[in-house]
Image (cartoon, rainbow, N blue to C red; front, side, top):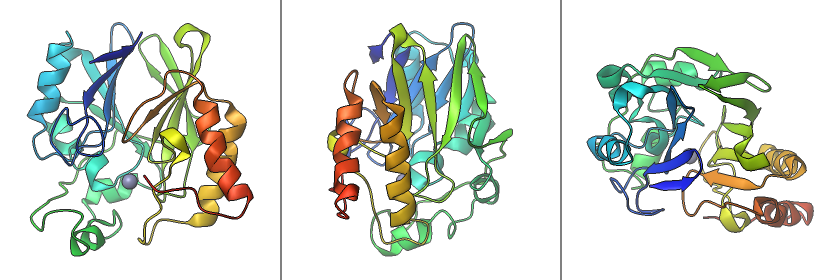
Length: 246
Ligand SMILES: [Zn+2]
């Protein structure tokens, strides 16, 4: 589904548009011209549905060269191995998170904890996946004609990164994963890698970035005025309160 000049929504589960398997996060395809990237991979239960959405949007899988991961929770990264093994996508992940993905570590990715809490089915698996490139704050990532900048955004998860893009029609866009959502919502969870102080610092940082377009990991995307939504989360933290959870 084409949602802006160069961005397509190709996966989205029960906390979004029900476009693909219900455990999938929002999966975006970024069209850089001669090559494309996926932002996040979904949960890997029925990844063929994401491929069908990519092809329905007019893209051959051969053009999709990279998989950029915001973080390695199951609903964002358990599908990574499928795209790597089946289509040869080069996986880009943060320095902190890459070893957990490469080991399929169900503790560091909080998956075992989330399974005990009933968030995932008991048989949900997290296949290990090699990482081609580890990135962190300020690193540039090129997808064809498009240049993205990595922003460290921990809080929701250790090693969480977002991808900042100054480009589309003079706007500033952010692929934010689970760092912030429409309405200034967040996802704070009782898991080892969620950290309230880091979350507050991340929201402060994103607030200063003055984002126009927000492509979050769940729920609706925003094609203008995203800064106003992020400002709501910032106001909550400024009052020492927690923003509402998604
Ligand atoms: Zn997450």
